[in-house]
Structure formats: structure tokens, C-alpha cells
Image 1 (cartoon, rainbow, N blue to C red):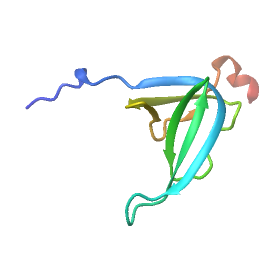
Image 2 (cartoon, one colour):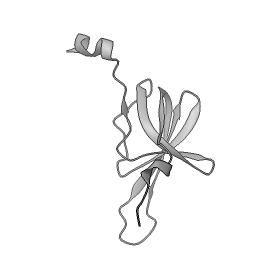
Image 3 (cartoon, one colour):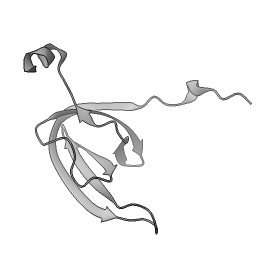
Length: 96
């Protein structure tokens, strides 16, 4: 049986100014599962959920962030390890 990857939906990409972060947790769904935190990020007026083992994130309010996400029902969930600070290529060498 041959699997076709053409039918898979492409990941949605988000980018914008991080306006707010609220953190809820720690949560533990089942015995032995490491604790995790649910971070609700408001980016350019839209809310996204980001699940992480870390209580704090490497991004701050006011940063321009970029990430991949998927829609699960009414929720927009950011993919693990895809959240980062957007670097403007024209400014990159000026900061060095």
C-alpha cells in the first residue's frame, strides 16, 4: 500500500506581535506523565494554545513571533518547537 503525502493539509503558519501570555498549570493527565503548562498566547488579536513542559517561554510580550499551528475544533494549537522570535533579515546584521 502506497501512502500519498499530497493529500495532507499543509501546516498553517502564524506571525505577529505577541500581545499577551497567560499560563495555566501544571497539568498531569495520567500517572507518570511529566507535568505540562498550557500557555495561551494572544498574537495580533487571535488566541493560540501552546503546551510546554516549561513554566516560562523564550518569547516575551511585544516580540514579533512566528510559528506553525493547526486548528483543532475551535482551538488553534501551536506545534511543539515551532514557536520563535521573527528576525527581520534587513535588521539581522545590524544587531551583531
